[in-house]
Image 1 (cartoon, one colour):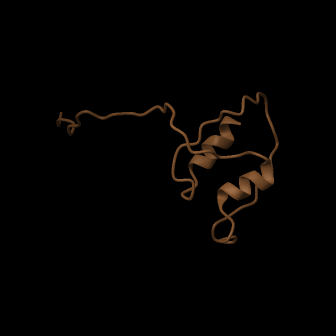
Image 2 (cartoon, helix red, strand yellow):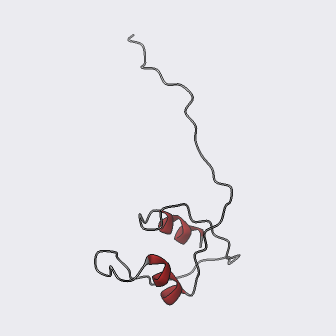
Image 3 (cartoon, helix red, strand yellow):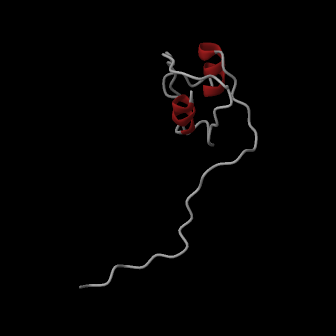
Length: 77
């Protein structure tokens, strides 16, 4: 389920990180067929609910980030 959450996070229409809070463990085989290009009238949120029985809810939660404080070009040797 964490892999599904990662893949959903990459969909531009979702627009945010998706965190797996299903509590489901193990591996699952899922069929999810949706594209904003081929199905512009159906949102990804509706498709996830109808096809997978899962609900995407906006909420706040912790995420990992990388902060680059400073960057310099390497010196010539």
